[in-house]
Length: 79
Image (cartoon, rainbow, N blue to C red; front, side, top):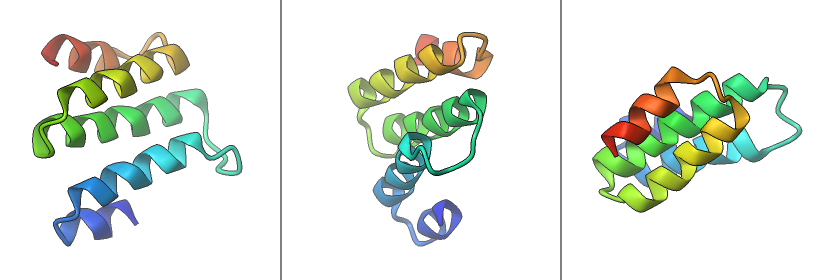
């Protein structure tokens, strides 16, 4: 779904789909996978939608889920 939305140019929809997947307890994912989804959504918010504050909030959530996530820390530094 995320790829389809991104190909259609719906960056907001793609970010929302990633966030929804990370938040949905029915989706079988590890905390690390949930954190990766939040990092990907944050990158969309920051780079494509120019919403850096919202991106930082997602990155902070990602770090809480996976404190070893280098991608989340790197993205926080870039934000």
